[in-house]
Amino acid sequence: TAVERVAKYYGVSPISSVRMHQMKRFVIDGVKEVALHSPTPDELKEFGEEKVPACEFEQAEVYAIDVAMSTGDGRAKPGELRTTVFKRNVETNYRLKMKASRYVLSEVDKQFPTLPFTLRHFEDERQAKMGITECVAHALLTPYPSLHERLGAKVAHFKCTVLLLPSGTSRVTGLTLPDYFKSEKQPDEETATVLAEIAAKEAKKAAKKKKKRNKK
Image (cartoon, rainbow, N blue to C red; front, side, top):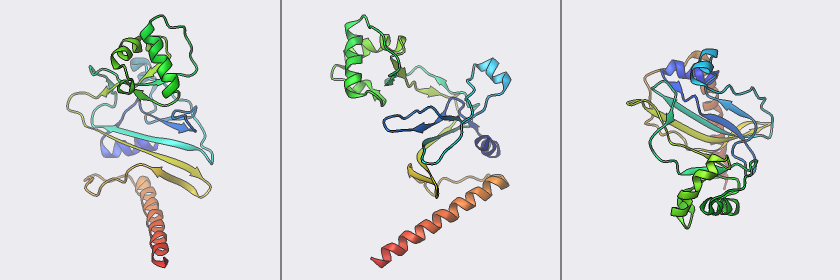
């Protein structure tokens, strides 16, 4: 893939568990998804990595671009830090036994029916911590654990949202990388050509905006 090609030239590894998802209203992880790393048959067998089915991009779709690169092997794993971020799995239902668990699910359904939340959002955080385990055990909630690379590895994470329009791809959220982000390494010829085209389009857009401001 393009991600793996760029990673190779810069001497880094894509985080294998990271996915880029199609987005819809109130849905941050739609059916279509793209993996940063396509596992080999050996990796599927040895590490139990999941192979993401191919998907086709279409106009008027929205995607969350999620890129994470590491100087390690790219296999980030849950660490010792307690998970505090979760999301409701709306397709699953279960009759919970504990009172604390029922409190958690009730509050989630009222306040966070589709988007992720943290335990700090609960008025009774102590009771939420008690009830969250049963909810996760029965797949009512999806945990977002803190992932860790091997000791000494460095990880860079970049996120943005893009629209697939007839006029081309448009980025609508995400920060512009600061000028001090520099690298002595150079991309391959194909990637360099793509980057030059993107830079030219951005310069053209900036020139149009400046012209409009001057007219006012």
